[in-house]
Amino acid sequence: MRRYFKATTHLVFGLTLGSAQCTSTPDTTYQPQHLDFEEARTRMVDEQIQARGIRNVRVLEAMRTVPRHEFVPEAYRGLAYEDSPLPTRSGQTISQPYIVALMTESIDPSPGQRVLEVGTGSGYQAAVLAKLVRDVYTIEILPELAKSAAERLERLKISNVHVREGDGYLGWPEQAPFDSILVTAAAGEIPEPLVEQLKPGGRLVIPVNTNQGYQSLQVIEKDVNGGKKIRDLIPVRFVPLVRPR
Image 1 (tube, rainbow, N blue to C red):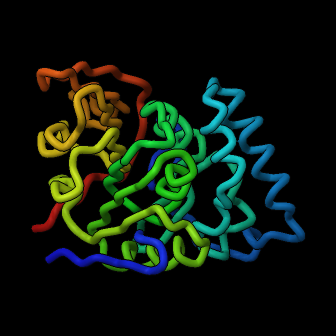
Image 2 (image 1 turned 90 degrees about the horizontal axis):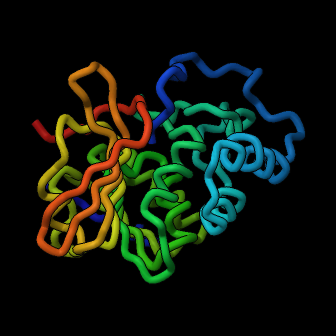
């Protein structure tokens, strides 16, 4: 069953390999004590993102603008701009800021694009994309996450993100083709339905399991004949891409 969430808006999970998953229980040490979120966000971009080689000026500005602390549980807001993923609802995580920036830069976003995201999570990646492209279509398989992300994006007055609950592996064929597609969960293989829904010349960015026991963040470029050119970026660790049973 597919459910659509519409507020005034229509309406992750990754980390670089070697970083630890967040499994600790919230405590009061995570509460912000007069933290200047804007200053912390600027420092995050300067020290974690730009310093690691992200150069797209629009992506850097989006990362400086979107309030990441609004997308994490209140108990973790004091850590919102640290260099790590953080726990969210339903046992999921919000991706490390650098990973969000890297995946976003990898699609070379432009104002006229329509982008599909698979794995809405907290809605943070979608919110960053919303600053850079015309429309974001995002699919989340967990009902609680889809609903809470839609409500959060509405509250933040982000009006160009469209959220749907459903099987992200199958994409969103009614809205295809897309200029780019981002997948924020690791797949065992490149999903062919997503490649089919990609425009010629478009890019699919997805973490894929490898035979070497790690995940590789891959960029797949589709040519005019439907062929695929695959490029590996970096080893990563994402939650698995879940499908209905």
